[in-house]
Image (cartoon, rainbow, N blue to C red; front, top):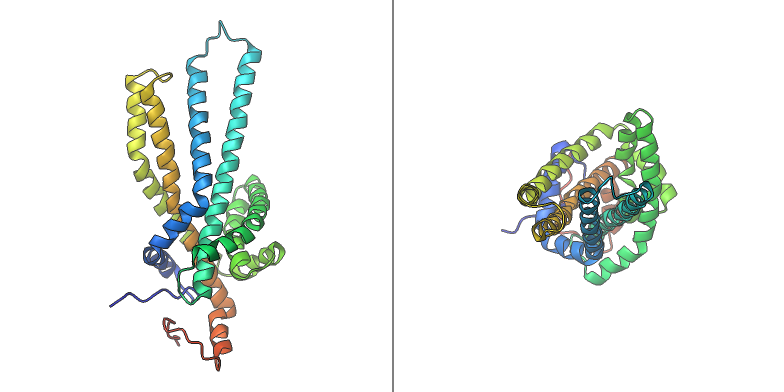
Length: 299
């Protein structure tokens, strides 16, 4: 008997959010991975290239530094160049995160809209190109506000970070503006901050452990190359740097779980506050449209 598909819009407690996140990813894994590489692949590749070049340049600068042959101006210019590369890497990582966020959230929005049917590539592309720049600009503003929160005794940063994480889900699922989503996230999370925070933190810890395990082989290779070879100008170190960078980017796949958890938090809050799925069913009465996979109402 095939497993029943998940109803996205329903109230969930802390444990259900975590369990349903894994279940949703398992049920839709083939499509999520496919769209992950289609829409985020170029950003992953760019991050790998910049990361490898930056790491190799750092090692080359440090190991070849000779205080007798380097003047101060040359040293400053070298590290200024590295700073620019770090900035470029941060830009690509930010673009990559936004692309993953938009891709997975668009998938869930279309999945819900189509009645638990996976969307096509054409449908995903239409949503992705429509929302990507909107979410990119929104995340940039929210990142600045969150950093300001961390600067104010750290705790406001955690508080705002959890709330602002809901904004992309609101913008995409409800097809609304940043201003509306900004106000809506504060309304939805009222009296539910701790449950949302707990789900995000637990999933974050799980993802960190999974990512660390994936990167263990690369860490072992890199340490062995550092201990047995000169850090600069060796083929072994170059290979391990490339392998570790590739594994770090592949580990971004686990961010799918984080985005799914955040979106389920949004669906949970939206259903608890507004009863959106119930209103949709009421609106379908008399139209002949039914959802065979709909979860029964609980009283």
